Structure formats: C-alpha cells, structure tokens
Image (cartoon, rainbow, N blue to C red; front, side, top):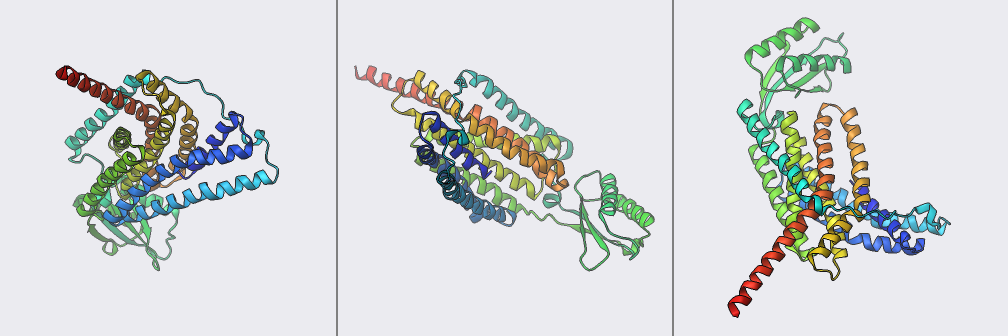
Length: 420
C-alpha cells in the first residue's frame, strides 16, 4: 500500500510533462500537486490508527501501532527520499523527458451516465451479503465461520518417541488427520521447544471425535494413548476485545468523516467517503460468509486494512474533484468535472490496485493456510476498493450533491413564493 504515494507523485509529474513543462519544473509541480492527496489520504488512515490504538486491545492495538508506523515512514520516504532521489538523478544528467514518460491524454469516460448500473451492482452485493449471513445463521447457528480465536476449541499435546523425526511431512500428515476427523480446516500445529512433541489446536471436538483421533494417532505413530494430553481451550478473542474493535472502527469512521468534512469544506464528500468505505467492508464480509473462511485475529486485521486502503483511494479522487471544481457550479459542468476527475486519476487507481493485488495474490498462492485466510479476503477488498473508488465514490458524491442542490433550490423558490 505504501507504493500509492509514489504512484500519485509520478502520475502528477507525467501530467505536467504532457503540458510542456520541463523535467525540473515537472518534478517540483508534480510533488506540490500530489501533496494534498497524499497528506489527506494518510492522515485519515492515521486518525483511524490512533483511535484503534486508544480504544483497541491486544491484536487490534498491535495492528494500529504497525499501521501508524507504516503511514509515517511511507509519507517520509515518498515526500522526502523520493524527491531527493529524483533531483539527484536530474543533477546527474537524467534530465530528458523520455526517461520519465508523458501521461497520455485519456478520452473522458462518462461514469455518471452509468451510475444506476454501478449502484445496482453494489446493491446486489449488499443484499447478497445479508442473505448469506442469514443462511449461515440458520444452518450453523453463526453468521460467520468463527475460528479458534473466537470460539475456543480443543488442544492436543502429542509426545513422539525419539526415533520419530518431527518434520514438515509429519506435520502435514497430522494436519490431514485432524482436518478429516474434525471436519474443519482450522488446525494450528506448533512444536514444543526442548521436546520431541507437537501441540495441535483445532475446533471443539465431541467425545467420540477425541477417541477416534487418539486411536488413529496412537496406532499410526506408536504413541501411548495415555501420554496424549487433551484439553479444552477458551477463545483468545474475548467478547470485550470484539466489542472494543467494533466500537473503535465506528469511532474511527466518525473521526475520518469529521476530518474530511473539515478539509474539503463539504459534508457530502465526507458522507460519500464513509458510505464507500462501508460498501467495501460489506463486500469483504460477503467473501468471508460465502467461502466459509475461518474468522480469527486475521479477520480484524483484514477489515482494518481494507478501511485504510478504501479511504486512501477515495481521497485521491475527491482531491482531484476539489481541484477541478474551480468556479463552475452548474449541474452540467459538475457532471463533466466528476467524469474528468475520475478519468484523470484512473492511471493511479489501476497502478496502485495492480501492485497491491500482485503482492497479495502471491501470498494467497504461496502462503500457509492462515496466511491464505488473510490474503483471499484482502484480494476481494482490493478489487472492491478499486471498483468503489472509480465507479461509486465520485458518482455517489455527484448524486447526493445534485439532490441537495435541487432541495435547496426548491426551498428557496418556496420561500420566494411565500414572500411574494
């Protein structure tokens, strides 16, 4: 995600070079024009991190700390280090436009004309999410597939003989046995330091399942049944931690709304940004519900990552709309401004989404089970975030803005009639 600031800067520089500016001038103006989008996008996420750190606990507090450090460092590297490197390259003779490239003039895309289609697709996603949660609750008694962190489970301590080597193949065999008997992919295996022993955590098992597992392990690996220790474990993510996380996200959303309202001098910008953010969260929730992905500590981290990613992408487009607004106020001009702004930021949206997507896609392919449980929903969040920032945020702002203008005009006409 840290690549986004550099993508914004480089796109701005290429835009200036297209206008005929020199490389030196293009670098300077490009950084100046990119500053507001980078600062606003990162500060909104930093506000969320601060709220999550103050209100959150455990994993949420740790995530907030990492997020805040990442934001501060990425802003410093993009605004200071990248600028120093570009200026140094220019001084060393890399001063020809061909080394930087020129942003191609894009044909304006009429996003506003397709707003009904966009809103319909988003509406279907929201309805599908609600329907999936209801179906899951009716079928399993839970709206999501809660993992060990939320539901607790059973832990096995299995001591092996010295002749039995503990390696990846053994762990895989043990994992397959537990997954088959428990009917769940939520199996965590860890080696015990200083002993030839494994600790396995899985979902809550019935007495019959415990006996079957103990018998299978004992017969296959020549382990005494009496030496296998079985215990029930409580959920590590307590009800208090869950409620703290939810409250923290709500407070963070309100604080971001206030900040965007203050910076953009328009509550419609703020409201549209938060609605788009909620849209992306719902889409990721749909993936968790439909794919029955285990919900644990990574669920909280995934949702908070999507919140930061979504708000950042939205700010970039809103910043361009604010820049292009100028003195034009008619509804026709407003529609053109929104379409122009989204089209101008399309390169940034595509580049940032692709770079992030490729990285997370590799995690989904090469990562272990717990990493895949994090990466797959995150992939959905990246896709939804790219879709909502390009197709939803600008058109939603335009729709609300136009409705508010009509209402204001209607109120004014009514007042004039009464006065007459």
